[in-house]
Image 1 (cartoon, rainbow, N blue to C red):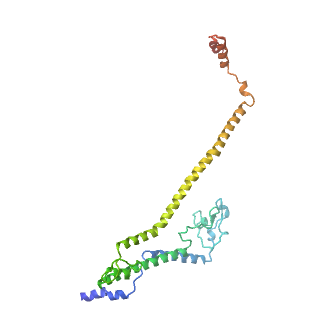
Image 2: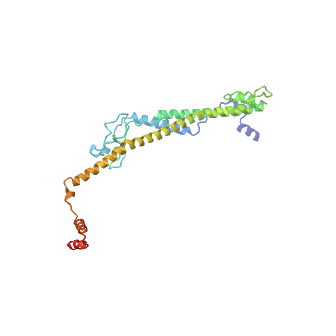
Length: 284
């Protein structure tokens, strides 16, 4: 009875080989389903006849915030129902108004999908590639194991399974199959490394050249500033200083201002009288 149960629970290898490999979609099925559901909901709403909020949730243009216009009469695409909440509760009334400063058609990055259809296509393509890769990996593993159990050499198994690898050119084995030598392994690794490192090196070289050009541009700008703008600013400051001095002494105010202490000190010093300083202090 246990043997019969084991036979029913574990199918034979022949049955496994005859059945086609199952396609595994991993975790992307939920994303695809979610995107499809969102797209279907959007289409249903776009096809609906409801194009405005309920009457009890309508607000006048006077309540519209400053710098915005009503979005009811400025819809370029399909109209969808917008549910509003009265008494300043937000909701659809806020969504009726659009800021004219914001761009109407925002630009998306090239590596991001621009619409739901493109996103669904990308998800489906990625899921298909993953499933094909998993099926190919499973086939290669089972085929390699089956050929080894039949007594095939490693070189023969590699030529049968790994068709993307180059053929070996080393000494032949017992089945007259050229062995993949160490030099060929190094050459193959170098070829694969160069295939993805060459674009990286080109990008790095372009970045270095851009940095050098930026440095040269900065030095040229500094030299140009020292030749033109620095002298111009210096001349402008000198002119402003001269204008300020002329505005103060233009009416002869500086010539009419006299310093009594300086005059007393000069007169006392010229006469040789040592008491001139005391007299000046008495006068003060």
